[in-house]
Image 1 (cartoon, helix red, strand yellow):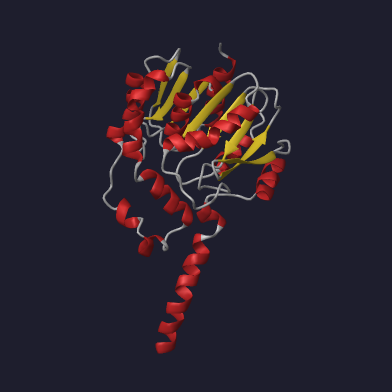
Image 2 (tube, rainbow, N blue to C red; image 1 turned 60 degrees about the vertical axis):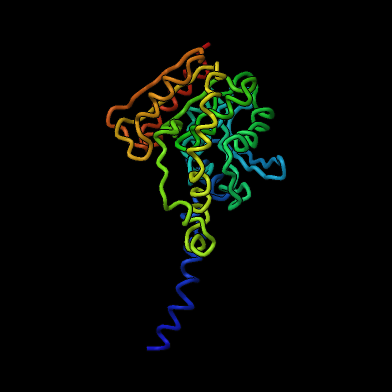
Length: 286
């Protein structure tokens, strides 16, 4: 009996650690796996880049003709560029755009585990990508937590952004839940239990209310077209976030709010063809 107890005391932590480091729980795929996936779906070979900014490394994947309009895809929390694998593989999308999917700071292969809770800093880390790859036009798309990131990017670097696509984005501070358990969950004695990707997500979401509050007066600075797609049955990001965009993006040259009746938080993937059509409109409509 004692041997069994000792076995579990020694082995269980090892198993937990191994499970937390698995590809599934890190929410990322290696460059080699991405290449294999794209080949399988008939997409051309991607390019992989790592840029350095303010002592941070940002990794991203690019596919498509570099002379075409740029579509920059920004994932949620937790996540990585791998969340957009099916978009990178979509030959309909690369017919009219070059596509970049980025690992946000602390996620994927961008200093994995080293979180960045500031939306201003998150945007600053992505700015060099737009400077390097923007050819004629750049549309930035963010899903979930990626929504406020792309909004902040447009606020801080308007000269680099020609369109903002917020897909089920958490942008309204008053609709952002402030769960009491996020702070204790971030204590060192307990966070080791959880996968690194979840720890990073918690460290990003914990201060999100304050981060969104700081952005409220900056919404008036967005003058480019803004499209918001939101499911009415989204249980993770309330549909009211779309109403917030309607109230705040008052200086957008073209505000397009699209409510998907019965849509969940995952319509990004279940309605991918629709999202690609939206991106096509945004990259071709003057």
